Amino acid sequence: MRILKFDQTTYLIRTISTPVFGEVDVAPVSLNDKLMDEIGTYISEEALLIDEQIFFYVDDAVLYNPDEYLIKYLEEEVLI
Image (cartoon, rainbow, N blue to C red; front, side, top):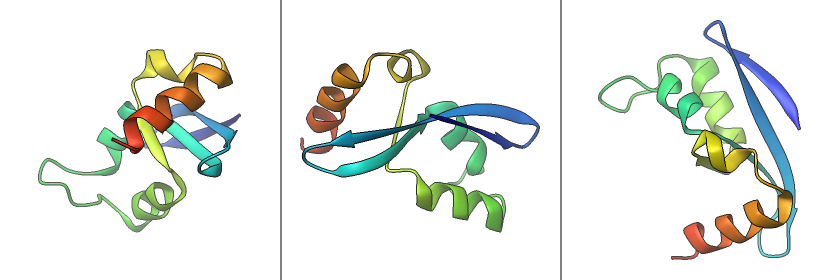
């Protein structure tokens, strides 16, 4: 788990190890919303670099669940 500060806001980034995807970073959707403008363009080079590090974005409430729940959630959402 690490903290990322972007655009004067702090975000929690979870690093989890999954059997299907390996070790991945998961971040809140609220961060994804800040990285892009209303037409889906990155707002800066820094935003692009941050996004390239994130495997998947989830609702804030999902992010705070135990690893086991988050792993199952990712596998269900990504493999659909």
